Length: 65
Picture 1 (tube, rainbow, N blue to C red):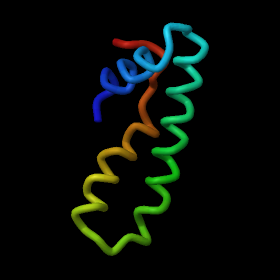
Picture 2 (cartoon, rainbow, N blue to C red):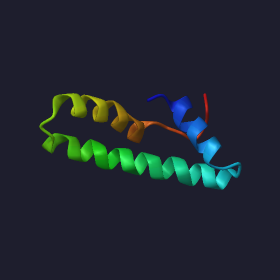
Picture 3 (cartoon, rainbow, N blue to C red):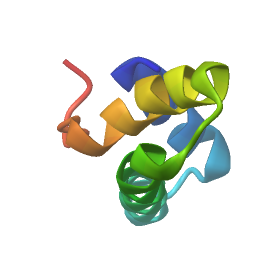
């Protein structure tokens, strides 16, 4: 998942900047939980998809550069 995609999702969620920031923070928190739980998963295809998603937890979403 790309940074631009996350920002676009937040913008679709709300036109208010504070709501967009909250959305992105919540999304990153969820991705961090996924990242932590991947280690106990046995389904390789699912783990690969979740590993890609979990990378959002490390993105700096403060600007759309």
